[in-house]
Length: 223
Image 1: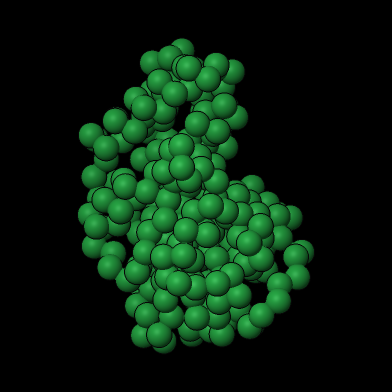
Image 2 (image 1 turned 30 degrees about the vertical axis):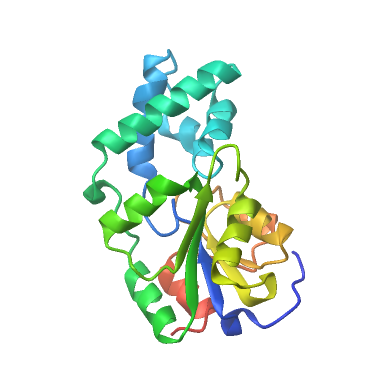
């Protein structure tokens, strides 16, 4: 496990959240849309086989579960994003239980909140608006050709808040969140919401591994 300098977790004034699998339960909608697109390209994969898609940037995820060349990967990614935007409604991507309670409680304590995600930034903002989530001061996501990695999204979220790594703690559901935060010297609280295999978050260096937002809140000293 990494050692992190600075304030204890529960005293840090900034809390950064991943989006997919952390704030919102997007996995069923992602699986449905990506399964459809992959099937159209001749790949019939089970949900278990598609799990590696959840977490990394979409193009990397596609490469993890298929043998597609770069050009086909880009075509599939574009088709998936168009299908997702066209067919997925807010009801298909509910917030995880107690997420609103936790965000409200953190805001009431004066914490500053932001999203740092590998999902493309503009659609993430649109999804948060559609879900009525207003507690985040900033949303930093992937901007193709400009901001590509998880660490870059986390750094952008900090920049938007005028904060430093020493101010922040990350909350995420995959090893990519833990490792991206660690690149910047930020501790990450892991949450097992369905995509990570058992032990993944601890092995990646999470300072705590939680089963739900209630446990995350306890680690953050909210309740």
